[in-house]
Image (cartoon, rainbow, N blue to C red; front, side):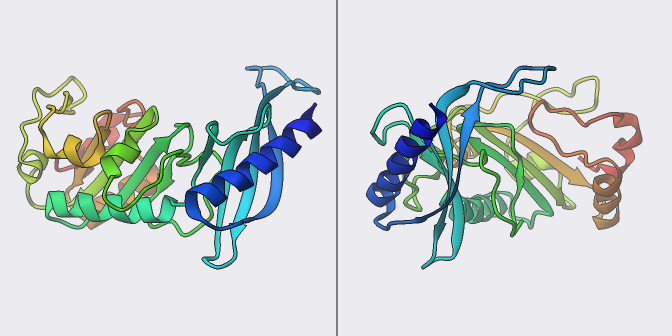
Length: 242
């Protein structure tokens, strides 16, 4: 069954990339997705019917992944992260233009799956579950692309004299018990207009570059998944300006 899924998934992935981008990629590897059982070891896991296809574009020297159905021929149930580099650069540019300042650190979690975070400016190859999108990014439809799947999370760290509400031009509501301003972005706000209707953002402004370095080395505090500053906010608050 898995061999059949791999055969069909491989064919679907190649056709999908040809239709979407206009070139034929080489296939570097295949991996059937299997059903995971929490807290249990399954020596013979059942396949889900989907296949991860590792691909390579020789002309652009880009390694990427396609997540494709192996149950039937067709390209509707296919997603890829071929454009992750272009999307990351656009996110970084748009964020720094919006804030009017350089950023120290940007994490993205977007696409079909949200388990894998990625740091912008990371030059390593992408994980197979990161940034899988079905729609084509044409350079102007960032909000549409980031909103096309369930996950659309951005974590931004900076060192800036101004406070975050002033940088955003947007009041952030009341402070919660952990010292974090948390609220819903209005529909006509520029953040939502740029990054999509379902965007979740975490903005952290550190006192200085040294504080940023210490906090990230010791605690890796930035997390947008649950707005959680990891283990102990009391040990980190004096590093953070806003």
